[in-house]
Length: 117
Image 1 (spheres, rainbow, N blue to C red):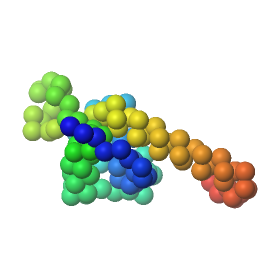
Image 2 (image 1 turned 90 degrees about the horizontal axis):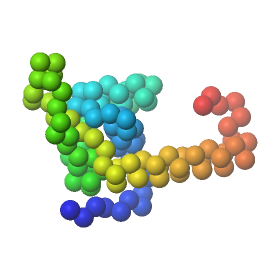
Image 3 (image 1 turned 30 degrees about the vertical axis):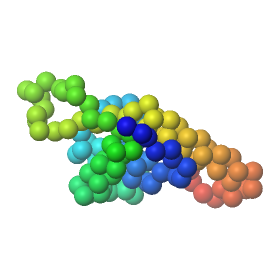
Image 4 (image 1 turned 45 degrees about the vertical axis):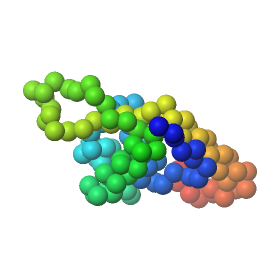
């Protein structure tokens, strides 16, 4: 499968989904809750937004379905779990670097005075 070469910034939904999957495989509902938590409640995804994003991210090679499952006694077997691909990790890293560069520039220009970060 040929992967897209991202030249644009990631959408907030995609960015936060990648962050949610960085350290742990997660199922859809868990991703939704982690995105809401990590964004301080600013991004609340409904199932349509989440699964639409997941579908595109799977097609783009940013994430993949994880086939190792938790013990069925502790989990619903209908859940699908997702994890980052190496390509997804690289895209997240590039986006974080871009944000870091923007923060550096804003500091140099004293644009952050009075803002809470």
